[in-house]
Image (cartoon, rainbow, N blue to C red; front, side, top):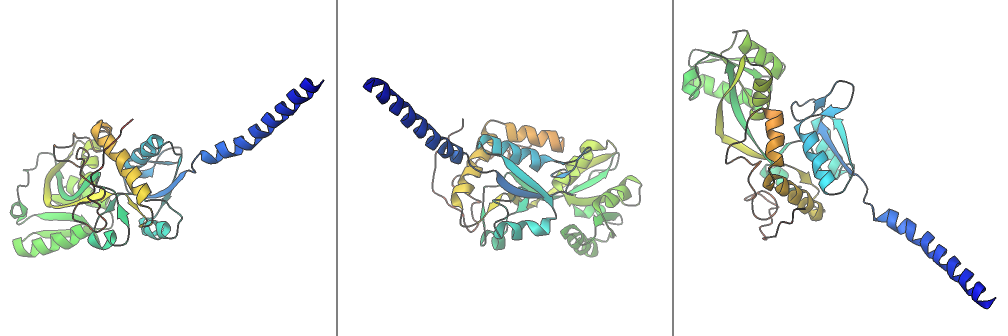
Length: 286
């Protein structure tokens, strides 16, 4: 009888321990990563038929979260709300492409860059390639109104002598080229490459490599651990070629040898920018 009582007590004790362990195990699962994108910025994030958001950055950070063993919630909002949203704690990091500048890097931590952003020309198929700004003399360049591309084009147009046509949207500027109203358009390289991959009459032309800047993922200054986790995952995707494959999928070209999709930089962050941590670390990819 005593042995039966002891066995019953032991069983109750074990059940009690099991009940106590279960919540602890549930608590071990980390909450979803919360982030956001500009949902109108194709090919990085834009609506898909049937609902939801698709694009390079959606695919990229869905895969990053998967490799970190985290779920992810990606809001589709206007770009102007993303940085304030992160600063207020609504977002853990920003999945939209963010250009790394000195001012921004003083106020948040960036991963190393995963894409170059640069200015690039697009022309109609059959047009003579542009080798320099001088080739545009006497011609017309279509730009998206209110962008840095309009500012630079107007400056160069005054110096060289070409017309600048400003349109309300980038698709309108591209249509001006396809219809023959303008010889070329200038915009961000990924937009030009994406359009060329979808329209055989439009050709990605001269890239102004001197305008290159890093696109990277920012996190709050208070969370260097998350910055390191995100960058390590991105670096592993560079090493195994999956970032190159995503680039090929969305931009329709194989990234060149010096592309950031291939380049693993030392330390954490963008070298030469505030917040960069040059401390060497060993990369462990599963």
